[in-house]
Length: 122
Image 1 (cartoon, rainbow, N blue to C red):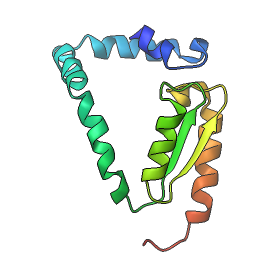
Image 2 (image 1 turned 90 degrees about the vertical axis):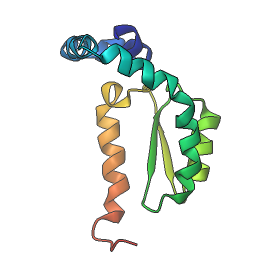
Image 3 (image 1 turned 30 degrees about the horizontal axis):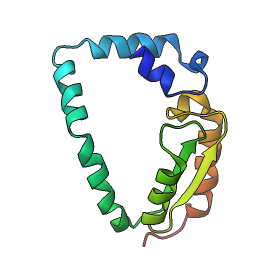
Image 4 (image 1 turned 180 degrees about the vertical axis):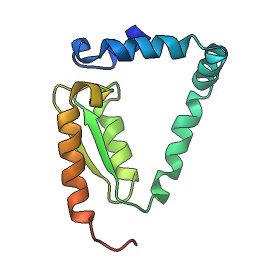
């Protein structure tokens, strides 16, 4: 688990030791191994799920770390198929962006939701 987390951040020093401990404990729960394998076996369905992205009818912000695992063309593809989606990339961030740059996540979310506050739902 530690390797997976470290591979998903731009700076492994930003992973709190308490989180590593908790992930270790969770990963060792009875049945977790089977659940994890099931998750991996169904990875193809994640790609299939993108076919439903065009049905999204709420405001969407796609927020990526510059060092995320996904490739830039994959990110752009998702932005194009979600109607009206906004997208931003955060420097010095990986896949687990809230660990690397919680400040930037909060900043982007506040800026994204600001024009939406008080708007009637569509």
